[in-house]
Image 1 (cartoon, rainbow, N blue to C red):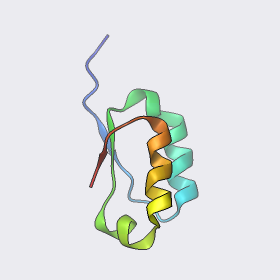
Image 2 (image 1 turned 45 degrees about the vertical axis):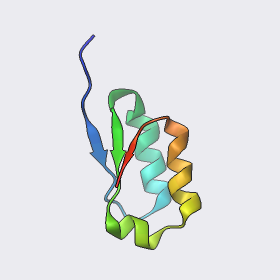
Image 3 (image 1 turned 180 degrees about the vertical axis):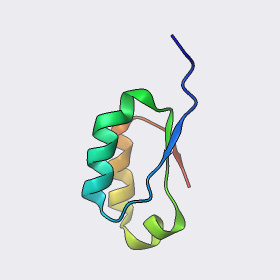
Length: 59
């Protein structure tokens, strides 16, 4: 088994798009990167929702 050191940059416009993307690839990544644009546009609840994938979230 290879060591997976991949963080995916979630630089898309909607929460739905991010959740769909992560649903498809969460087993292949090590973590999630969200940017300032995402943080300022979305609620703390949206950010917490990303936690369901059990991956570290890098801000």
